[in-house]
Amino acid sequence: MKEDNSFVNTLGAVFKRDDLRGVYPEAMNADVAVLAARAFAELCGKEACIAVGYDARLSSPELAQAVCRGIALAGGRTVELGMVSSEQLYFACGQYPERFSGGVMVTASHNPAEYNGMKFLHAGGQPVTSEELSKVRRRMVELHDIGVPADAVVQSESCDLNEAFAERMLALSKTPEHLPSKPLRILVAAGNGVGAKAFAPIAKRLEHEGCEFVWLDEVPDGHFPHGVPNPLLPEYMSRIGEAVRTNGAQLGIGFDGDADRAGFVDENGAEIIPAQVYALVVQDRRANWRSAEKPVVMRNLCCSQLIRDLFQDVAEVVDTPVGHGQIKQLMRHPRYCDRILFAGEHSGHYFYPEFYSVDSGMLTSLALIRRAQRLQSEGKCLSGVLSEWRQNYCWSGERNFELPSREQVYAALQDVWGKLQEIPGAQRIEIRIDEALGLPRAFPGGAQYDPQAIRFPDLKVVVDHGDSGWWCVVRPSGNEPKLRLNVEAWGENAQSACAEMTKQIASWLG
Image 1 (cartoon, rainbow, N blue to C red):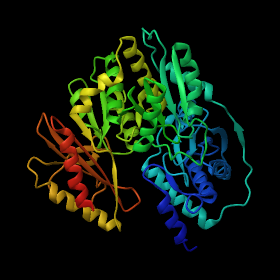
Image 2 (image 1 turned 90 degrees about the horizontal axis):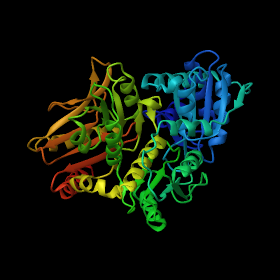
Image 3 (image 1 turned 90 degrees about the vertical axis):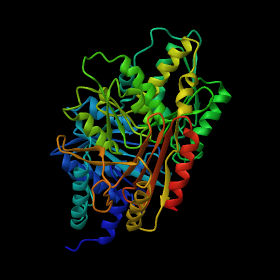
Image 4 (image 1 turned 60 degrees about the vertical axis):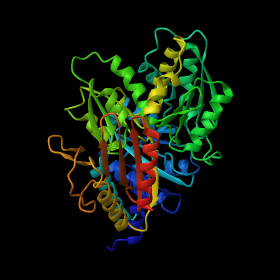
């Protein structure tokens, strides 16, 4: 049977590095969802029982039902969790591995309202590998060519895990010995995603510990009337900062659309960038580390020099590729699994070994609430802890550059390296397979760089003078002709150095 090239092209646009995402209904629709769910259920094995959840997007209920149908076509059963956060689905699969063979979350995370997508995971919170995702894609093409039966008997039941999830989150969060004498006011923004719905049972319990909550855009609304909730968007964080100042809160929390990520602002409404969030969490976790062995912390290729400067003497700092699938596999590797303390990405994903080695915006929110409680009981505030870091480390944020074609993406990467390697002291860092692990991580690279010929073309260049320096990362998007740029500088002139290098590299990228 002749392969349908239009369908193959559709899948090429929908399949990303770790999940599926596309515009609804042109690319991501019920037909695609049925095939993807059926292929994934086959991957999970005969008579698989799969948890299914969905976010607040207008198309999500329809796609969730299509997912249930696809699982039924594979001979599997479904447990419908309803509208939940992604990490509530992670909780289901991680906490009840004997019940759930895997999970499917219908979400497009932080993408605009017209998008939707799917995330997959195995029992125990085990990530779906890139090889398995490729198998799903190939199987979808086969199933499409064969044709999908019109009807399927869906074996499904409903399950509400909201309260169990809240109890688990709080059990993993240590209450401070000394609570502040006056209430800690916290602003929680959901951006009309599912964050407030998922966090509400946790907040209710925290109210008994002297926390007071103010809610912003808490009602789920797939139109996202105030813009897509994304902690990497300055306008989203600025709105949260303004609400914190208006309401006199000591901390602001802003969840993304499916609430597995959270952004934060201090009592002045100033953003606490992801590297600083990472540092605050690891400081507390390192203080509670009881093993004689040195703990491991993992940061991805775009994470701050601050992490290395703070923790290189008290932990093994492992640099990872960008992408949660790769990080989760490294965390679970026998070399690291007994010593892993924490892992994080520059995008605001934070990974907890005690939470099935998956990401949790909720646990990170609890960690910052606990830190703010302790500080308030001491008559201090978050901005005081952050002031030195903010002065000495400056991050550009992530900037995107569209190019006409994939070939020009590779040409631009090579051109940027050609210019950067002329700078004295420039050291290229590359991602490649660690033969001892069988998994990719970061290593020093040489002068020879051909992005089109290597598996991991991400380009990182570091110029380190000790007390000062800068780095940049230029990396291609997984499926689009697009480059993403991150720059950081540290030292006495961090602000000006970061601005200068960002402007220079941006001019090379057009």
